Amino acid sequence: MRARDFSHVGITVSDFNKAVKFYWEVFGCPLVGVSDAPPERVRAFFGVGADHPAPRCKIGWIRVPGNAVLEIFAFEPKLPPAEIPWNRVGLTHFSFNVRNTHKWHDYLVSKGVQIVSKPEQSPRGHWFFFVRDFDGNLIEMIDQRRMHYVIKWLGPLGGFLFRRGMYKKYYE
Image (cartoon, rainbow, N blue to C red; front, top):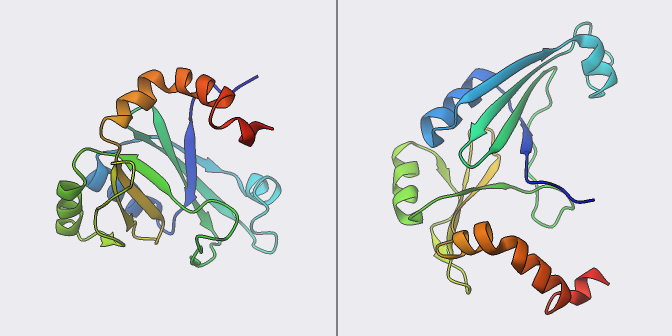
């Protein structure tokens, strides 16, 4: 058994409409579905609002080019955002593949997006930088350059070869 492909990443947002507008206006990612979870599901499935008379959760699916989805959750009641340190076990960020991180950096500055770092080049040649959305969620902007095509088209072969070769120790 193995996964077919990457499906989605989920984030909780403070304002559903603001999130939809942000990801559309800044990244061109449209909202493709919306659902409202009933209070009993919010309590039972999500474990939210046990002491609230009518907890709510609006769920939205935002389509990202390349077949991924950003699933957004807007809960009532909600907790305030908390800083997530890099060394805490768990999710830290999600990433958008882009071309020309320097142009993206300038574009995001012009849109008023919070910039965390300037574009820098990794030892393997790709360029990346980090930004935050309006709730503080960390987003990596990465230009994998030629590796984008290697990963996309030769990724399965590379995985097969690396599992048996230079990365074998990680599978033992």
